[in-house]
Length: 146
Image 1 (tube, rainbow, N blue to C red):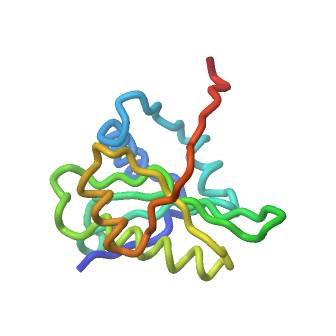
Image 2 (cartoon, rainbow, N blue to C red):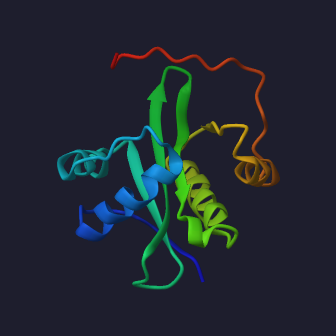
C-alpha cells in the first residue's frame, strides 16, 4: 500500500532521499542544503510530498506542489517529480500526483499545471491517463544564474 504525506521537517532520511533521487530527475540538479530544504518545508506556498511503499519504509518518490495566488485566482504547479528507479512501475508517480491534485483542490487552486520532458514517455502517458491535457503553449526560460 502506497503512503503519501507532506514532509514537515528536515531529517537525514529526507536529505539522503533527495541526494539519491534528484540525479535521477536531472543530471544538472543541485542538491539542496539542510537550510534550503527547511526553507522549502517552511514555505506556505510549497508542499514536498513523499511516498513510501509501507509505513516507516524508505522514501521511494517525491513531488513538489506549489500553490500561489495571482490576480486571476489560485493556481498550482507540480514540479520535481521523481520516483526512485527500483520503485518505478508500481504506482508511486500516480499516488504522488493524486495526492497533489487533492491538496491543490483543498487549497483552492483553479488549475494545476506541470511540465514533463517528451523523453519521459511513461510519465507523459500517466499524466494524460490521469486527465491532464496538453496545452498549446510555448514555455520560455530566462536563466538568472548565468
